[in-house]
Structure formats: C-alpha cells, structure tokens
Amino acid sequence: MAESTTVLIGTAITIALMHTLAGPDHYLPFIILGRSEKWSLKKILSWTALCGAGHVLSSVLIGTLGIALGWNVHRLQWLEGLRGNIAVWALIAFGFVYMCWGILRGIRGHHHSHSHPHSHPHDSAHTHSRTFWALFTIFILGPCEPLIPMLMFPAASHSIGAIVLVAAVFSAVTILTMIACVLLAYMGFELFEFKIVQRYVHAFSGFAIGASGLLIMLADK
Image 1 (cartoon, rainbow, N blue to C red):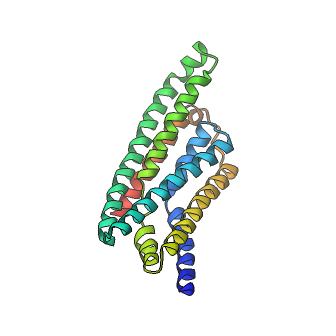
Image 2: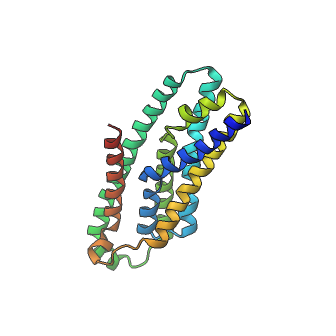
C-alpha cells in the first residue's frame, strides 16, 4: 500500500510538471500581460498563484464530487473535456478582444499623450481588476486533464488519504511550476524597444494570448 502510494506521488509530480510545461496557457498570459502592463513582480506572481490555485482546485473539486457520487471516469472526462473547450474558446476570445483594445489604444495613444498627460490610477486599477477576474474565470474553467483519470481514480482504490495526498502534491507542483516559468521569463525576457512595438505592445500581447489558445485547440484535434 505504502509503495503504491509512493508511486502515485511520483507520478503526480511528473504529470504535473509535464502538464504545466507543455501548456503555454499556464504561464504565457501572465508573462505577456505583466510586461505589457508593467505590473510589479509581486502582482504577477500573486495573480499566477491565485489563477493556478483556481485551475487545479476546480478539477480536484469535480473529481472528489464524482468519486463520492460513484460516477465513472468516462463521465468525468466528458465533463472535463467540455470545460476545456469552453476555457480554450474563452482564452481565444480574451486574447483577441485584448488585441483589438490594444490596437485602438495604440492608435489613440499619441492623442491622449498630449491631451491627458497624467494617468488616472483609479481607471488603471479598474482595468487591472477586470483583467484579473477574466483570467481567473478562464483558469477555473480550464481543467487539469490528467488529474482525475490518471491520479485521483487510482488513488481512490487505496484510501481517502491517498486521494488528498495525490491531489495536494499535483496542485502544489502545478502552481509552483507556473510561478517558476513566469519568474524565469520575467527575469530573462525583454520587450523590443522599437516604437511601433511599444505603442502596440497591448495588441501584440492580445494576439499572442489568442494565438496560444488556437494552438492548444489545434493540438487537441
């Protein structure tokens, strides 16, 4: 029993790392938006951690509820697949809406730099709040596909404690990997200094996020 639980824990660590690293949607939005919006490192990492927690805990909750109700793994996979489709479309929509907003902001930027030389922190805070809740909602909708069929169901054949332990390890490794990816990118990634890129940095950011959603959708086909 102890040996099989240890194997499950090792599997949870491996799958969490692979699942997170292979999915740019786990870290790309925070890297791009953080740099384009000039957020502090503390804010970027905090938002990454909160969205990561929402991402894994939603799947943990669904998996736990499904096991408690006696649902089979295929029913839960169907539900997770449905959530995944909604999440990827939401990510695409968020990216391209943000891109359109960035284009308009870039076009109007020169005018506003003269007519409104001082920024309004209150407006900026509202924009950041809306961005966070949009991302948080997308991450809650997004499933951790391998968690339920590959970890929680096998753990359920041992004990409730095994389910809790495996889910906790998977969640912690996923969130920490997201934070590590964002931190490394923040430290090493620099935006180009060309004026056209600076003016339309939000548009480029939105395009990159939307394109990552499209790539994820194509990869699942």
